[in-house]
Image 1: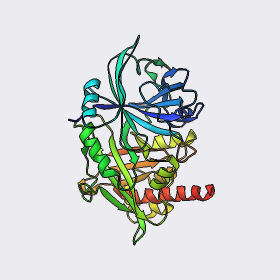
Image 2: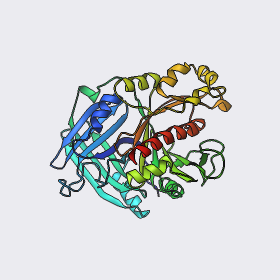
Image 3: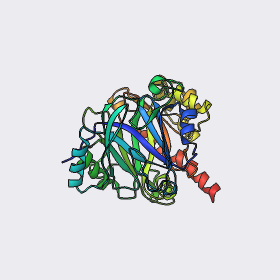
Image 4: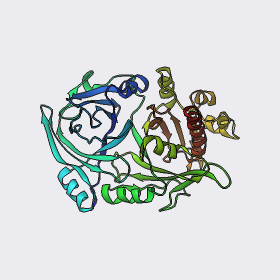
Length: 385
């Protein structure tokens, strides 16, 4: 029996003490300081934009932590900075932990209650069967504070700060898997956490996913994508599993696996109601976005498609914003832009996404994105070498 998740509470990162991630999220992407917890081993900072909450855990790593785990999580003791935990709310933490153990899952942190003047919250942590990824199962129905018991509120009432309206919620998260690993991971999320398969168009096949070739001919390589959604009517972001296809050279998924030193959370898609404003504001604040090949905006019919969606081609091109359409389903469009990696190891990055009726992930843009990121990582690979 699965332990279905209800909604996403937050996404956790683990970085060394003094790392700039929390500062960059505030300066470049309009996140506001929500709450903080400081202990001998950890400084944990919760940041929020709309309903999107990131918990940055600074410290640990087996050094001064002395075995102490971060509150509401687990120290992955990973070699490089990483996004390693998705915290989901559930109705019954103890019952969920028992159900997952019965399914053979590893519950790394048994159900634990945390109390303070804000109320009580109960959590457990289960390890996912891929890389350093884990999931916190949380019941915060007895909590009245802006975040969670054990944390001190920061900022103005409600924790709001920074430019309002840039990001409203987490649209999706993408996990980079080893080659051939996505089918078993998909089955795990369906049988253990109640996710269900979400087809990415008519070419998406059960057990195979959506195959996107990077080019023509043998050795072209490409991506295999599979998407999962949470229980019906629940505010759970879509989970996308990505793995590389055999081909000549190393693609960005393989480079992530090498630089991250294993599978893991590759990027988070943040929904914005106005991607032009969000991208422009982020760039003005110092963020760096990935530009698609210049020929992308010159493709036959692209200008007409962009104008048909109500946008100005020059404004999208200025910040590398991609647009894809689901014309077969009516006038439905998807806009997306990607940041450069947030860590020096060139692993994790963010995506800004706006949907104008489209439900997919811009399958028509995947090849353009592939080429853009290949150009980016290829250049950095060459410089690093």
